[in-house]
Length: 164
Image (cartoon, rainbow, N blue to C red; front, side):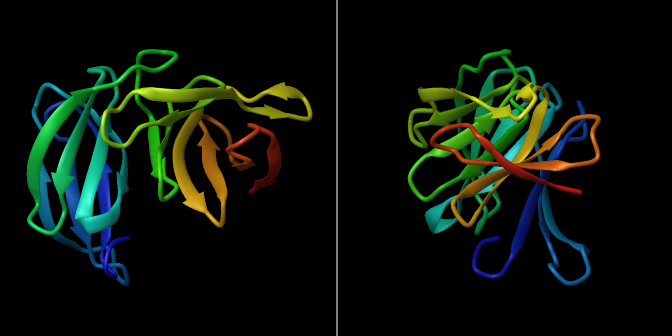
């Protein structure tokens, strides 16, 4: 959300987009296509309407201005798996998931990794971390192929609980 507007990225080679949606109905209000060569993945909107969108395997983050729906630049990023799955913003840094059991803290300007934290629950590490959202000081992430979301303490990687 930015200024009461809902934004999302969609993914598929040749069909990835960044879109503004009506938050009440989900109707697409505006849309911009990403390059056919990339598979768009996790997206987060930061201050001043700047958004970052991860690509799944291209190791690129694409920056947009969501107010104008214009692409600004592309930046390389590194991850544990070489992929980008989920992205959220804590007000200072980006937090990135890549399908592994790691939550990476990333500099929002340079896309360089600051820290990489193992995410662990009571049964051990939690793999296949996917889309991420920042909610009340926690990272919420769905686990690919599971029917639950984990609540993660971003400083320790400890799973605080699950949501069905």
